[in-house]
Image 1 (tube, one colour):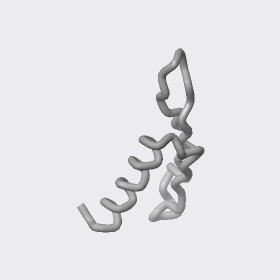
Image 2 (cartoon, rainbow, N blue to C red):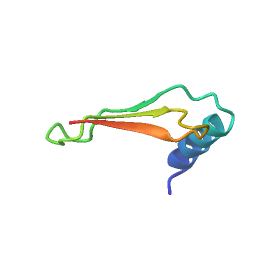
Image 3 (tube, rainbow, N blue to C red):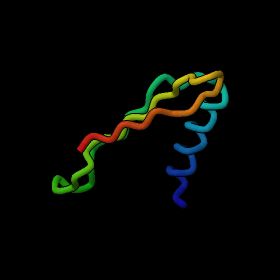
Image 4 (cartoon, rainbow, N blue to C red):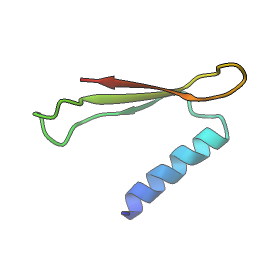
Amino acid sequence: MSESLEKFLSRVSDAVEQSTMVKMTLSKPASKRDELRNIYVKPVLIKGEAPFRLHLSL
């Protein structure tokens, strides 16, 4: 795993653990022909648990 990917995953993990993440958007596909354009991740609270809502933009 590359150093930059490890750093990114560490920061995301820290934000989740500290409950400071509001929303994460991943975009800019490698190829314009890619069907997947954006990924949106957002924490939600359901029955006292905090799963994530994932929205894929095609």
